Length: 388
Image (cartoon, one colour):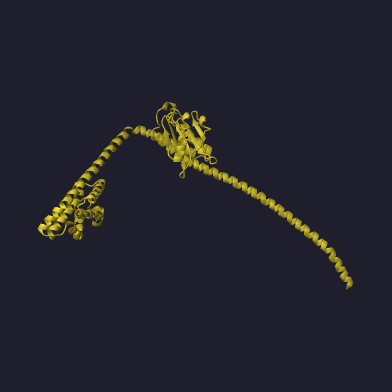
């Protein structure tokens, strides 16, 4: 007697198209797909796994495929009825083909062999679909709760957003009016210290000659005490150095010497929260913006909106600073080029003077030589005339 797996392989060309057409006709969602498109929706793979399970008695691949199919259709918001049609209609197609092609006894035996495979498919499919659907419902509930909380604080969020937009707009307008590096740095620092949550702002840049990070500008309360500090990226441990090297924003809540013994800047920020945001241009760190909280905010970290605003300002500042640096380089190059042209012009003038002097010397030599040669020639001509 033929095994179930062999019989399925022998009749695949008849069973599979009939089954897929039945799914397309009976399913509301799959009705718009062609038979070929529907076959590509894991149905052909499902049939292959079904045959393999019938041949080996191992259901691992079949269960994995059914889980994938159930998960995919659950995420695409199929109804469970549409998903169950796939194994149900395959079973119906196989039963119909069996009764028409083999004896009743053989049909009964093949049906009994296929039934456990169908039961495993249905169990896995229903369990997976329920799990994925439940997870999706929980996610929607969480999203609904989240939206409810957000709506409750909508006014505050709107006010914060308007403040951020106003800050960014004012900064953008100010930065677009200048390409001077010092003026650009001062505008950035002044704009940040005007934010209520920020007490002091320092902008650190890299000294190309020494590779040190130095304070290019400092604004806010007691900013002078930071003005002369220089940090070595590979020699000092500091939040500024860490942000510069990792190109990531870094923060410390409530700085103190005991909790942060390796932070070289800790004595300047005791009891405050600090955040360092790297200035990045073309994937390279060119500096760091460091801000700290006011005295009355001791013990509290910067909130998320303030950090997001700082990041936005940093991104805008990096572009403005890069433009200013490029302008300064172009200006400096122009000055150097002008100096080179001037030096070259002076050199050419000197060469021209030397050439003129040389030309005069040559002319004088020719005149003298001609005069000296003329006298002997005249005497020779006279003697020649006498002899003739």
